[in-house]
Length: 289
Image (cartoon, rainbow, N blue to C red):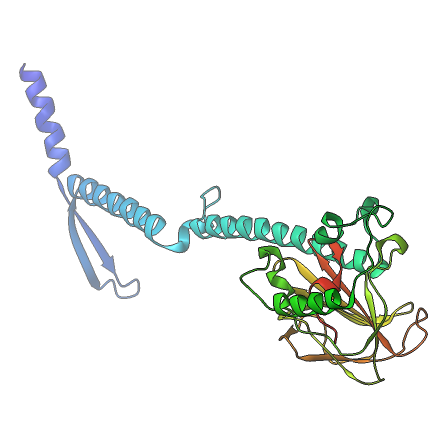
């Protein structure tokens, strides 16, 4: 028991024993600074210094950008950038697919052909098509006059028209004489309108120019994308007033009547109208008079 007490006193004495740390001038041995220390003071001071250093390091890592320089530590900024890039990539893929579908439609229009030769013919024509061999189609004069009057009244009657044909209220691209009409059997998916050279060609509705370039077969061509998946095509123009990507208004001049391209015999407008990627008869939508 006495031995243990003596040992504790010895340890206490060593811990509390005073030491003096002196800083001297090497040349004159003049005392500059002196400190009275004990082992206990050094131990407590060192422990507190280490704890403070650990706490400061933790704060720097947790609340400053220095943590990004630590290998293996994930960066919040980099995570955010990676997430944004992922969203942008998905959006770009969607836009690219959408653009590719539009380009396929443009190529289809330029070739003047459709896949599998499936033509979306005029529904009214198919519905009311009659067999001339079974029906007497010779009209009397009064009947003709009545038909013209009714057609003129119904043509601009919004309440009596089919909802799908409301889009038929389109601006006429030009005025002239029809030299060739819409004929799916001969793959002429357009109407040819003969008009004086350099006459203005106008947009049938508001839209965006998808294509406005020169082609060897059909000369100067301009293609405009409208609402409701409607696309209008103007070929054999003498000149173009709009460029790809421009926005146009209904009735705005986009080109002039010409005779350009290999597949033309005189100044005229080759006009095509496409809906949902398939050609439709422009005469069911536009009055070229």
